[in-house]
Length: 199
Image (cartoon, rainbow, N blue to C red):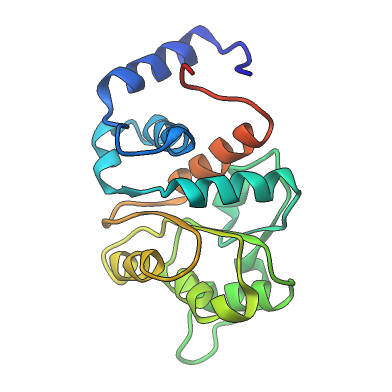
């Protein structure tokens, strides 16, 4: 089912469907890619997106089942207003030697939860590194890894995509909380039977 969209939103997704190359994604992956394009205004971003259909399906199923969502920063939490989340950075009051608050906070958040959470990273590569370090112990149902930046971001995302984790990402320096939020929101809509592209 596709709910009534505003005229601007309807036209926006029609333009994305015409202009963006979504052909290499599965049906659910196309929804996620289109939402990311919509959030960034960047048609060319699709070339860098890593959106395996099985991972998107896992995320949709996990959200439908009410899985715990862990995000790295408050900006990302604010971008997903219709689903409760734990913000990892809030669990890191200090910065221990040799670690970042993002790394410490994500470790704390993961260790406080049982396996099966959804994890979304939209800021620091070190938060994604913490997810990878604890992947075997905490086995997330999905990792939406979209850290942004020039130091460590691309490497962390490449490591995520060659791991055994169900993962979504953007394999370049580009990323950020808007992209991570777009991915989660697209899957959340699909978990409720809502789609933005013509079916």
